[in-house]
Image (cartoon, rainbow, N blue to C red; front, side, top):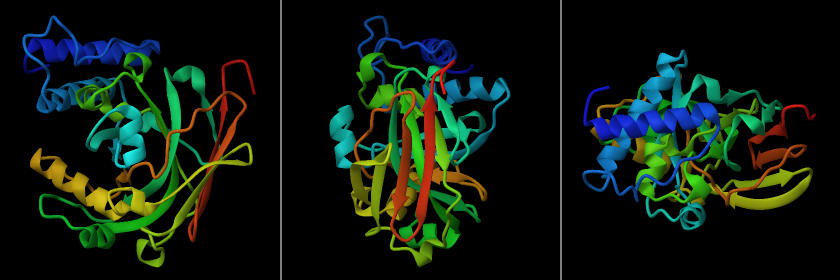
Length: 269
């Protein structure tokens, strides 16, 4: 890995934590670093962490915007959105099963996924550009998972940890983004048939397409384009939900449809 050796060492530590399903102390408070980590350092660590997973055989299938809603920012103690990279090993089929033993500190959130039909290369991307470049949208359940102990994260911790990516489910229900009011459409999240939280697209930077535009422009400044065919997760519209083995979680978006996933642990059903 190129770059300062301490950044590579932190990336190796996060990759080892991901492989062993363990957590590590927060990066931002390490006393042995030559200087406090910057946001640029954190994105460098993230890329090295992702590169290690790519070297092990995974592929990049998309991107995600994280910490877009005020509720999630307040819960996690961060003050701005971040982004992470979605890898092939993270995707779970709609209606499928997630083994919680594959994860460290999983929590669930529901959001809207965009699937692109054209490249989006920032800066200068608008919400209208996002809608034109989108093939379809779908309901999504994301299982976020921090490799940082006790979810004690600041912005550099979560960015370095690939925006706390865990696994994700894209619904089979899809729609043209121009056929759904993405900003005002209501969302209901149920666990075992009981409503546990609600939200709407406006909670995400004023609308999910705004979040995708923000990410396209942020990535453009880093030389990272969105490519046709990629899945882009626009950010949670509600609070994080704790899940246990045996739970079934369902996300329903008005005018679009739903997706679901069931949780288990090894040896349970």
